Length: 443
Image 1 (cartoon, one colour):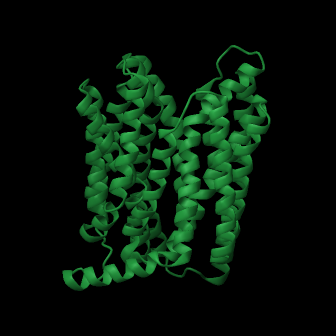
Image 2: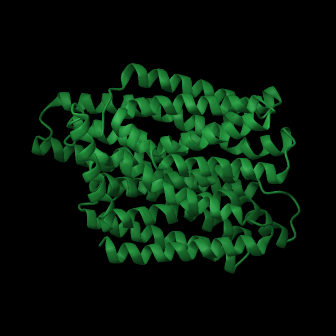
């Protein structure tokens, strides 16, 4: 425990140093803008500030709802409700299958009927998913996981789609960097994850049931829904939505040309491989550290809560590093993606080759730092390459192969160090393959 406390303190200090460096960098940029008299319109700065408050005020609430549930999903089904291992696995698989199926059409519906409406739908669907855990009926639990899968697809596609379209519609490019919005999203997600872990543990201890975090998540979702309803404007994918036939034809043509673009296909492949590796990592990191500790002869369980906080700090570190990097072109962003894929591959392979607990922890922390770098990097690439008119469709469809990969991988999951090592080796190999594809097709 003491050692991991030291690890957390070192990561927190490094993050503080990065935050200070970023603030100094921002001051320099502000001075340069004032020297060049850019931007001249002070109102645009106020508009940018309002936009950030409007978006992030909702964003932190929906991420809090997501993070509150995560640590308790498995133990709620397995321990509190007494379900078998196979039934628990089936519930998880149902969520990923639902996410894969809905990924093929929710983006199109969001583009056609409105991204704001899709975000409101997310709040309702995820709330019903949370309510389902109050029941012991298996059918209700499976319906809840299916709605959870739908909600995950919406969370990781329509919110960002709405934000990018609104950013362009308000003409904020002179007063606010889109890349800063992406990196701030990841940083805030890390902060919210740490706080949600603390609050979730507190409410479980206070109420004596693991259902409590799910009820708290409903409160977050209700508040987020009210914020969306009152403060968000609607935007659509097709600019000519007044004529449904022309809109549909133009939308299909735009989608077809986008999906035939090798750069978009490359991003889809990188998304599938990296985020698929990330989801599998979530399943396997705790038993991997537990096994490494057992090999060294220590019987006490690792402090998983503190380790999770360390990982979130590492993810925040990655997002702050991104915000400090000057990316002048799509090519620069592509090179950064290459570095992320290479580092992620190494970080998952090294713990297989050496079983020391400290090495495994720092490799996993490096992987989380890569996660913090990856999301704003990928968001920036997608914002540059995908047209607004088909953004929701493309973002949704990019998640289809990702969920298929995770379902297949979980379907063959077995107990034991050998299988876990094989999974890490396999994902490391996939990341290296993605590295070479990105190098060939994106740069």
